Image (tube, rainbow, N blue to C red; front, side, top):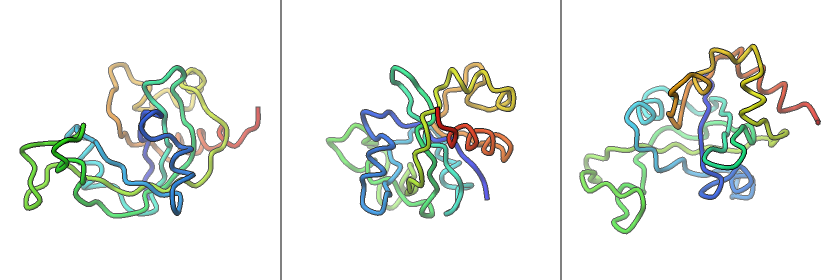
Length: 155
């Protein structure tokens, strides 16, 4: 089992949106970075843990706990000619971009980025490294446990 931090802009897909979706599951679409795509395609597996992170908002942070719910498959949004994520170089026979399904498991409490930066056990977390901008990053088992402990604490 592996662990991941996956960023989503809450005005596009929030953790609450996933909790409200059928079977608490949505397709993770719109990834347009090759390294993040490779994580989706080559390393993620059903059952892997996901820290669902809200980005590009007033208070970025981990909004809930989720899991990878499918194997990788072509991202449908690359073929939508009027869509935000259309890629004219992608074809159904040679897709360039990948999706996985993500299932929300539990919300916990919101863990803001500012609090994560103050946690010594997260000092090596990829998210917290200078210049880190990837939408999907690996998380160590120790970092996963530290974040889960905080998410499950009540304020």
